[in-house]
Length: 201
Image (tube, rainbow, N blue to C red):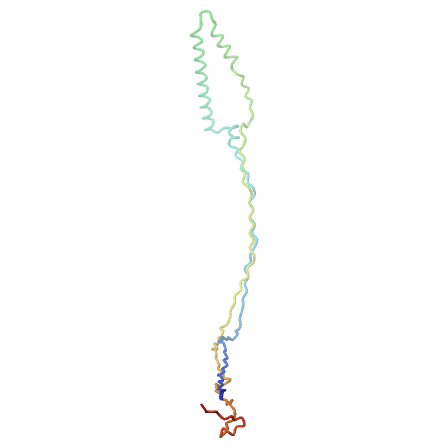
């Protein structure tokens, strides 16, 4: 036996439209000022410098008073040492002399022969000057021009537009009931396809 009724449900349909919020502003006028800072080129040059110290060279030709005193003292000490040595040697020779030996002429001859001849010839100046130098230097500095931009804008008006959500129902919900069975005959025996029911047991 088949069902005689068919029930069908129709769901609701809703369409949603969303409008985003936005911020609107009215454009204003703007002013711009441009200023210029000039740069430049700077060159600083320092040439090489030569240092010449001629103190020792000049002192070898014409000593200072202090150097004369120091050199005289050294020569005096050296002469005293040499004289002490000579006197000691000559005194010893005289003490050890024998009768008949001519010691004094021998000493005079040795003193004459051993004494070097001083010609007072020397190269002047005897000391070279002290020469030193400082290297040269060159500094170059270049600075480009600068542009300054100053923007001046008027007050701007902003308008806030809020968002919006819109719902539209495109289809209402519904229940559809449909009879799918055949026709009903009264009495049932009037049905052309009627078959009597056998109730015998």
